[in-house]
Image (cartoon, rainbow, N blue to C red; front, side, top):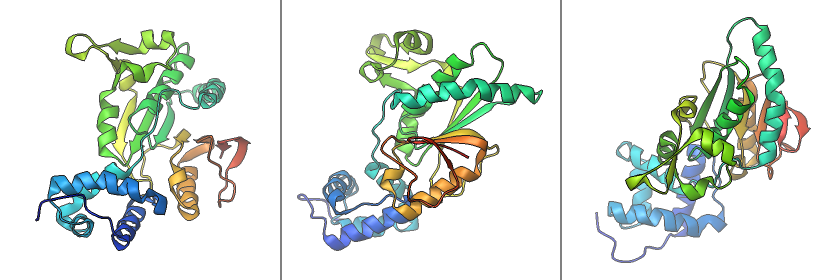
Length: 279
């Protein structure tokens, strides 16, 4: 392969091919306004791989040998903006749902866990926030809980699994929760914090593509999929929402982003309040 000598142009036909591939692989719609972002993010991959054009890169990632690079390409394009306890009203609502949910589990006469799926979990701030909220709300009960956290990006899942963050990333976490659920780094880890094992062990991080059919062993009581479907077109949104519906327990809840809505989609959910729906 010819090494890069200068910045390479992303031609319209190349962008069209890449956009179509991304859509087919993970449902993300890359409109014309994303072209500069794609060029910037994939330009680094071209330079590191020694590809002379975006077309050569596209041809490579669509071969069997390019499977791993295709995953890296999706990682590079995916937007991962998140922080602890984002959209706080969702956590307030969840804490009102949990006591009744715990009572229902306990009535069944056996130890049945509350199960939550955070889809598009990015670097882990969301599932860890959910886990801390559950731990606080259920601390006086015997009800166990388990969280499945998924993302298409292997890169962000590595960060999420480690549970290590710069100290400035946790400024929004209430001090009592910081004391209870975080460890402060020292020495070479000074300026970093880590989620304590008691919380990390409650979460199973997995790579999962929302375009695939979920094959989980248990249905969920609550699903979080926030600020993810804004990157999908209507038909993809409807398909994903149906998959969520199918893996929820009866009366289970779906939380989506505050800027998102199911209005205009083909779905069976009941509206609860803005961005919250019930099966």
